[in-house]
Length: 217
Image (tube, rainbow, N blue to C red):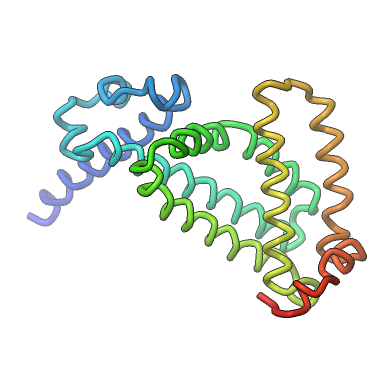
């Protein structure tokens, strides 16, 4: 009886997963507005009734898709950062990893929803808690990333969030400035600067001001 009960549950979870992944693929392929629930159901190869059973509204589906995108991104970032922390990867490879992440599929899916949230208050209120959890997870990763003897938690978070924001800003530029040499110059420059921020004179100078001496973390 227990085995019989688990089979429908497993099928239900698999259907839900297909719908979420199909939503991600559809938004990436055609954009947020053009991604209809009918097209998503067809892409997932499920009935519209099955879609509505799992996700009564389009907002529910979009929210689940964003949660999955950010969870996947967090897992990737954490795995690579741990490799850098252990010495398995050099610091420069971490920058190389972040660049395609914040200029490719993960980035563009996020930007689709960020852009829509600017003018859709209801969507914005739904997505803010999800994004806050993502940034909290990143902050926890950044604290582990840096040796606490070199940089206290607050400084570690600032340095690594600067890195992410640099990559994200460059990712925005790629839409209308397809110039690989330009981005390569920026990446190589940051690869040279980042070690000096984490454990060098650039970081010491950056955090020498009164604002950073007042409180730590």
